Image (cartoon, rainbow, N blue to C red):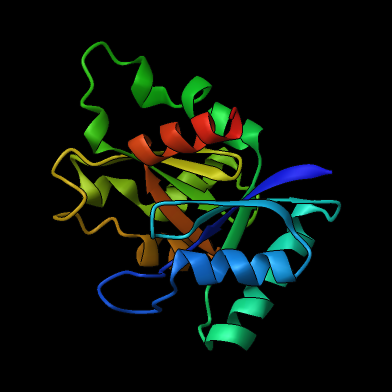
Length: 179
């Protein structure tokens, strides 16, 4: 049995797609997932299952729609995906970095490093981005709330389903994997 981390996009944000974590946890346990744990109210859910990651994501997405009526994209990742956010993140190698400016987009598919050209990142300067397989590392130099380099733009340009987390959340999710 493997532990999977399901990242749900767009729940409990600005009053949209509201799902109480207790109700989500109960729904997932009723689906047969074991050791269901949530982090924050924004859709970070650990489940243990014998199913592979794509099947887990599909099951969760379908059940959320059936039970809550919300169409919620789900990206399922592993502990290794979180670990690589630290070992492969080029912005963490900089001498002085404000970690509050660092974000990770987790993609539904593996990308090539060359896909960074599709984002036309130069038009978003001073913000920066780098691709590493199914992760896009972003450094928002002007702030996440002020940038035009948004998730919707990234998804459209790269033809992916993605969900974004700040580095603090990624750090805490990795700690939860180790509990």
